[in-house]
Image 1 (spheres, each protein chain N blue to C red):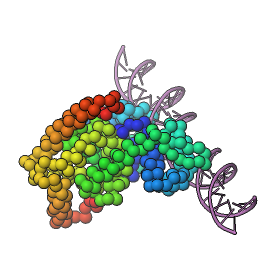
Image 2 (cartoon, chains in turn purple, orange, blue, red):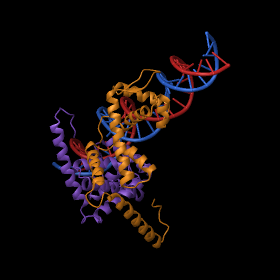
Image 3 (cartoon, rainbow over the protein chains, first blue to last red):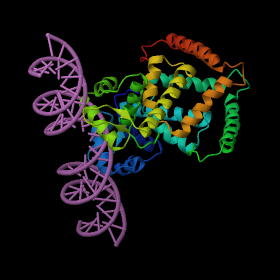
Length: 165
Length: 165
DNA sequence: CGCAAAAGTTAGGCTGGCCGAAGATTTCGC
DNA sequence: GCGAAATCTTCGGCCAGCCTAACTTTTGCG
């Protein structure tokens, strides 16, 4: 577990607030609500909690901003997201949309230790001493072939199998 | 998301019931409670829900058993867990304990598509055309070195840094 | 058998999150 | 500068999960 003592939901709020301000906008309750797909009352409640933990500054009807501590946590969440996304899409070759969704769920659950190892692993793959840098490409094309063959086999062995997707 | 329409918690209940029966015991409320670290009333409640969804058979004071559908789902969860655990421990070289914990959280959150790609990826690493089979070993030792070097650097550049764990 | 211990359930209460409805505040256009 | 629209908060209510306390059923031992 990622343990910063926050629930996945609270991490999401922090991350979104960070993203909004990184995007150059003033984070507003409404905007946060839209991005998270929740209603404004939910955001109000969440902000109250986060304010209570000293992670955001926010007085009623006022501006929302991350405290230093809140910003640090938000950055950590975002870093986990970025790393996971890169791993899923670049290494595993998962479709962008899926990679985004999965990263967003995984980011709250990956421990520090695993994060570190995964980071190292990505570096390694790029620096990889085997083959000229491109072990990822090798995997991707091997995977394509393999997938293809298996699809054929499945086809050939007939039957109305369950959707394998 | 893994979407079987179950919450992570419900998936855990199914998984644990499966593990208990695979271990050759009759799953009992008490045993499930112990394995999950919850109280018996929580288990009772969960079983009621699962029974409602037709995933377990269980009448009051009676035996607990998975229906066919429940068993299928439980197996899927377990498969996800196994794959993740292998990836974390064998490939990334994460410590066993951590790998177990992380796999247990990740298993509820990995989409089918990502699961499939990860599975393929593990196969590939074992079959890997680059270097004779052992790209994992290469990573592990490269990681050890790199970690070492960085520890030194951190050491040398002094300062009471935050625990980098 | 008969009754205590173990196992299980029901009841009530808590927290985290979410919602809609309704009321408060701020902003903006005229 | 005032009123309507937009934004935000407060208030109840809901569901998932968990707990403790108290009650019921089953088990098993003397």
